Image 1 (cartoon, helix red, strand yellow):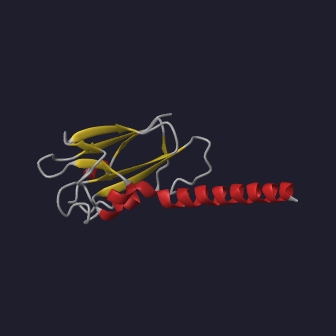
Image 2: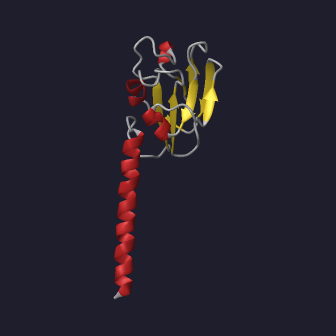
Image 3: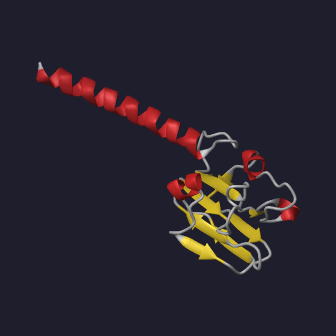
Length: 143
C-alpha cells in the first residue's frame, strides 16, 4: 500500500520552525510505491536531489535534479535505493534542511529507522560473507 509523505509534516520543507529532518525520517519505513511531497515557499527555498557526497558536504552545485515549484512530488524507486535531498539556498543545508531516504523492499529485514549507512553495513557484511565463501570454495579446488 503506497504512502504519500509530506516531508516535515505540517511545517513542510523549511529551515524555519525547528524541523529536525533526521527525526522525521527515523520513524518511517519508505517503500518503492511511496511518494514524497516537498511543500515550501519557493522564494526562499528549493529542493535539490544530490549524490551522497553532495549531501554530506551540502554541495548543491551539481544536483541530479532541481525542483523549484514549491510543491514538488518525488516518486520513490521500486528497488532498494538511496535518495538525498538538500535545500540549495546558502546556509540552509548546513542548518539542517536536508534529508536522506532509504527505500527498502517490502520483504526487507531492515528496521524502519535504518539509515543508508546501516543499509550499507548490511550490504558490505553480506558481501564480505559471500567473498569469504567464494574464497573458501576456490581454495578447496586449488588443492
